[in-house]
Every structure is written in structure tokens, then in C-alpha cells.
Image 1 (cartoon, rainbow, N blue to C red):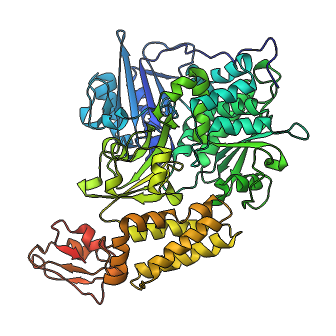
Image 2 (cartoon, rainbow, N blue to C red; image 1 turned 90 degrees about the horizontal axis):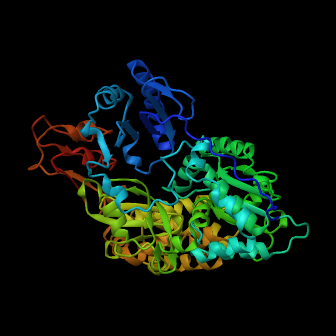
Length: 628
């Protein structure tokens, strides 16, 4: 399936016929919509129309009488903690200026229109980003290198012309007109791109195996794994919502490289907005001849289908995912044979995750050396992380591989909320591990992180502070993997259950002297004997927690103490009479009326009634409520 001698160029870009005087971009990713983005968009449309100064147009409309404005809904910008984010660009007298407002509500829109858009004076107290006047939030983007997220927050994901104007589908055009399939997978291999789904396997080598695999009927398949199930991870979702065409283009390039004529995008049904936009984008791409039959006028055929998964975490594993597509229960199978040899319907199949595929068009367009110039040693390019937990600036951050954890958390993330002490960072989700403060200078690098016992994984990065209990955190992740186990193999099904029972006993103050040795023994057996990566990596959070925070486990078992106060059975709350002002805030917060005392007099907690929920501790502003 190569290119014909006279290939048709990509569908021509529908150029902007109007350059609006005012251009407004509103975050309508899942986070933006949840924060009220659709109401903000409606308020801008109504407010601008009501001024009588600006006509509201689409950028590709033919005419605009007088001054005009354009309002666009975009994907996620990454700075999720500040949603709803609104970009306002003004053009006047040949000059252009852009500022970004954060936490915008419909009530703020009128003032933005009156003072900034009509009056020309930005409202400084609401600005979170400005090229002319740096803010405290500029640091969020300063250390990033947005390659995968290059279009997210910039284009309308439901308008293919926006993607084409940014050079979209030019990479596919290049491979169909200038490159052989072998040259394509060699170029990807030369770039150093490794699988961003967690395994870190060289993408070009994976494509080579599938390309060289024989097929009895010539049929091969190319699959995008969008089954993002790690707690706290939303990297793939944001790309699918904000830039769906980049995934289609990456898949089509991959399909050409391995000789596949059909592709599947496997997305969990819990991502309704991503699925909606994928369907819109697929229809547009098919209408333009960018996927389907005779792509771009060549003899290359690549038909795409969207498959909605039912939400099983195990379906993120390649063989279980293929079982699900085939209509079977999603359960892993033994390998070999590997999918490249015998995958979907026993045909050669290649599977890459969303982030990996989003890198492919950029590599083809800009060249392998440009991608390989980014990164560190064997870890090339960039990596997107979902930065969550006890960090000041949570959201999506795309950083060059090789940046340290300290730089990501304290530069991009702005440090720990309320300036509390850093406790740990959970890397790689339920397959990863907890790393302590002394390892903050570890680089974001496959090999370097693997040496710590954690992994890069798909990109989850959960930051913990002193109020988090490491034992409880390890229990949480093990609860997740144990519940998501498909049950096919005994080590995972039974081993994780026994490990979880031990952790639950420890958190309830019933730990025994041999529990830690038993935990480690079980963990090693689960890792060694499990059928797939879910069981093989499930013990990682427990093992790394024991390695770096063993003292906390021992305190739970021998001292019956939880230093973080997170394990209710091991925590006692009391009030320091000298610090208590009698404000009654703690008493109002207590759900069981365990706190008594007169106003402006020291209060007392009745230990017989107290349920150790911690509400009083969180509410006290005078540090009078203590726990031990």
C-alpha cells in the first residue's frame, strides 16, 4: 500500500477570511466545562452582541461589517486549577496583545468586556498570564516544552480547519508522497521515541516488528490505547478532547508504516466528551479524504473505528484490550505470541497509547534529530504529567525528559499547598511507587526512575504532604489494583487480596510483628507469578513505601501511632486549653457533638463520642486542636 505517482494533496486549508479585532478562547475541556465554561462562553456571546460595537463572527465567515469578535471553545490549557481560563486577544492599529484570565465566572464577563475589550484596560487582578507583564503563574509554563500539547487550548477541537491551519496532516502527506513504510518506522526509531503508556519500549522497533510480521490474508491492525485508568491521570483524555486529529494522523502514519488498513481507537466510556469530539473529528477527516479509502488520493486505505470500553482497568493491558475489541471479556493472555505477530483476530497488530501517537506527526514533520535533541540520554523528547495532590498549581505539565522531580513539583507546580512540608510523590499510579524528599533530584528518565523502584508510567504524579499517611496511601493503591484484577491468575487474584488484608489490619491498629516480612514475601511472589503487568506491578507502591518509609509502618504496628493522623483507629484528638479561644468553630464542625464548652472558654473533646473524623482539626485556626 504505497503512494500513487500523482498523489492528491491534503484537503486545502480553509483560510481565515476575517481576522477578528477581538479573539476570545475559552477552555471547554472537561475541567473547564465542570467549572462553568459553557456559561462563560454564552455570557461573552451575549455581552459582546449587546455592546453594539463588536459583531460576533466565525473566523471563516466572508464579511464583518465594522469591528468584529470571534469566540472559540478550546481544549484543556493544562492549568486546571485556574479554570475557567479565558484568553483575550485584541488587535488594533497593527498591534496585538493577549492576556489570560483565570477562574472566570459569568458574573466577571461584563466587566472584562467593558473595561478590557471596549475600554482597552486589562483587569490586572484577574490576569494569570500575560506576555507584557509576567505573573506568578508564568512559571507554570516556563519550564515546559509543549510538543504533545502543542495545539491543546489553542485550537477548536471540533473544527478540522483549525488543525489544518496549524500544519495538521502534513506529516501524513509527507510519508505518503516521500517515504516508504520502512523509512517511516526507521525515522521513528531514530527519534528515540519510546512508548508513553508506561512500558517505554522503542516505538520504531515495535512498528518494525509489526511491519515484518506475515499475515495470512494481508490484514493488519493499528490500535490506539486510550483506556487511561490510573487514579489521578488525565493526560490522554486532554489530548483526545483538545486535539483529536493529531491522534488520527499519528495512527494513519503508523498504519502506513506497518501495512495496516484498519485502526481502532479504544476509549473508556467514562470519557464522554472525548468520545463526542472523536466522532465529530472522524466524520470531518473522512469527508476530507484524510482517513478511509484512497487517503489523500493515494492507494493507501486506512479505516478508523471508535471502540468504547466499559471501564475495566485491566483493559489497558494490550492483550485484554484486544479481547474487549473482539467482543470478549477483557482478560490478558500469555505472551508470546506478541501482538505484533498475532494480535487482534490473530492478525499482526500494533498498539500505542494516545501520547505516543501525538508525538508522531511532529517527528515526521520536523525530523527525528529535532525530537532526539530534547530529553536526556536514552529518554528522548517530552513527557506529559498529571500533577495532582497537595501541590499549589495542579494540572497538566509537559516537560523535557531529564527535568528533575524537584523542578516539576516546586517550579511548575509551585510547591506544596499552604507551604506544608513535602512528604512524598507517588509516581506511575498504582503501578508505581512513593519517593521521599531525598530523591527529589531524580530525573524524569525511564532508567533513573526505575532504579528507585518507581516508574515513569503513563504520567501520574501525586504529591503528598505531612497530612498523608504512607501506609494508608499504599493501601489505597492496592485496593484499586485488587478491585481491578480480572481474577484469571492466582498470584494477582489471591496475592493482592492477602496483601490488602495485612495493610488493613495495620491501619486499624492490629498489625503483628511478622507482617512486614510477610508483605514483602507476598509482593515478590505476586510480581514474579502474575500473568500480566497489572499483577506484576501491583506490589510496587507497597515495596517502595516499605523501602523508604519503613519507620511509619513500624510506628503503626509497634507504637499504635499514625503520625499523619489519617488512620482513625490510631489517632486521638484533644484540645490544648491554653491555645483554645472558645470560638466554637470546632464544635460547629463536629458531626457527632463530641465537643463541649462555653463561648470564649476552652473546649473539650469527649473521646467516647469522638469518631476521629478530623473535622475539628481542619477547622481550628488557632492550632488548638491536636492529634497524636
